[in-house]
Length: 372
Image (cartoon, rainbow, N blue to C red; front, side, top):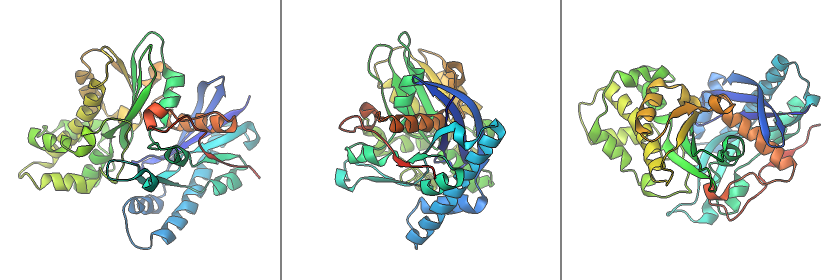
């Protein structure tokens, strides 16, 4: 039996997710998952690189190598706990860390669009002895797409139903939806911030990395005028395909919105940011002609009890569950997707969903870095 490993480190930069999966005729079975924490210095460097700054090429080059080593270590630890050898693994699919995402939009020409992920795949292949597939987004961008989201094609394959309208809601740093109608083609797009603003605000005001279970948000009240200001962001008036990142939604975005108001408590800001995430997701789904749909959550936001409760209240024509009900634990869905994309690349099969990314057609995604 041959396995694949998927590696994902998302916008939240909370940890490296490594998923060991078995793929057979597009059936994807999760065998083991491992969370590998970022070394503090590397996490700080990656966060700094998400915004323009001095000496970027030197800093990026170092971070690229250091992240490659961390990703390789995560794989080797995963194989150790699973009792497997490198020879048991067909390939690693590594997303890498996005440090800049500039897709085409109304203000940027298609020829100026780019997306940059680091985490040197040469280093991963060298230190694991496993063929590594990486750089998944840029081929889609070269074909006129957004390069994101890439997970809808995987969601369609493993979570689609002939009898039920489903929406897969991936809540990482950013949030994206995969719309899986029962009898129509799938599509999807980024809906806006997931955890990124809630994480940034609690880090800024309380020195904590995230709001566990949404408890701090639940202690406050949504400020309706601030919410309206946030939802007035131009990104939300644009139809999909579309994608976004820290370039748009970051702590400065929150600070700028707050300059229009006074005397909002910190916990009320957090409550409003949670509502902002929930409303931006729900409003995006409401624009689709799905009538009744079952929502399934994955990503770190699936563990936020307050956010999950709010989404449940907003889905007035269906239920809310997580992807565990469909066979893959929500913590490992995105990493498993990049294992699947690696398999698709090695078998000369397309990995993108043009209806989600806007690319001119299906494309084989990723570059191959052979094992030694």
